[in-house]
Image 1: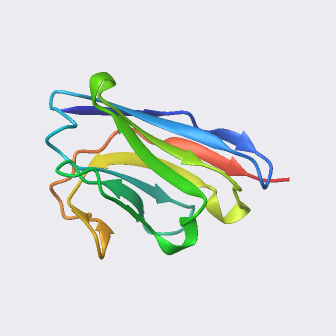
Image 2 (image 1 turned 120 degrees about the horizontal axis):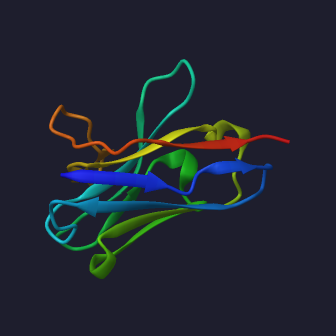
Image 3 (image 1 turned 45 degrees about the horizontal axis):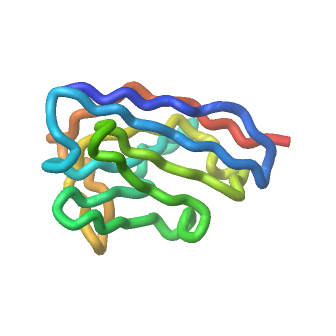
Length: 124
């Protein structure tokens, strides 16, 4: 099982980025995928996830209306489109296999497979 996140970079507030997570070793049609982030000095938190079974999505409150998660099963890729970025979005972003709860969102429970992170910096 491998996941590879990419697409991070440095943008100004209000800017946009699109992250990609390419999965291998399993099918994204059968496993839910989540995006997480970890800011300096803070714990890793769930940002968004997409459920494998029905494609339903979850967003953490601070990113609702600004971030959009999607996937392309044929490319084994999950995307996180981020717009209207704020300095508070600065973090290393990770994708991982996860349980995607409609209430609690992506779960960190010790069973996640993690990709290497990609750094997003939002600064003027």
